[in-house]
Image 1 (cartoon, helix red, strand yellow):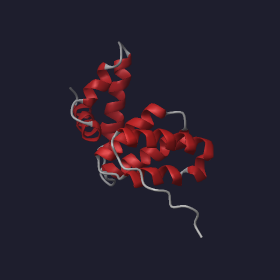
Image 2 (cartoon, rainbow, N blue to C red):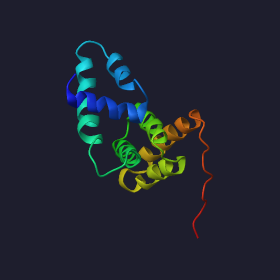
Image 3 (tube, rainbow, N blue to C red):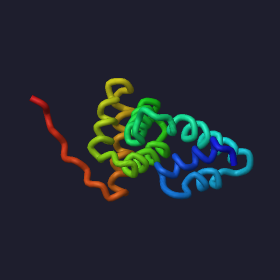
Image 4 (spheres, helix red, strand yellow):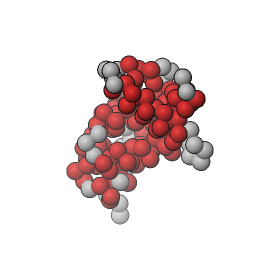
Length: 135
């Protein structure tokens, strides 16, 4: 195994849980396993392993990016789990989705916040109460 892949698997497993990197590769068939491996090497071996941001900050940024792109519900669920796992609070996660509405629009943000909220509930997290209208 290359050093880059080994480093990527360590960081991936740190975010998603022990052995999850192997699971990502194994869930693919044939050449598709190469793409999963490339993702682990590049995203986690090269990017997530860089100094300067915490894993929690990286997960919130990943969530913000996914919401803005839209249509990536499986990845939103995964990064919501990852964000909780690395110490983000439900409030931080939900506020991240609320924050990006100004960049991506209400349809994407509303779709995303439903996916994220459902995932938080599935994880047993307490969902914060609404703040209500600001005076």
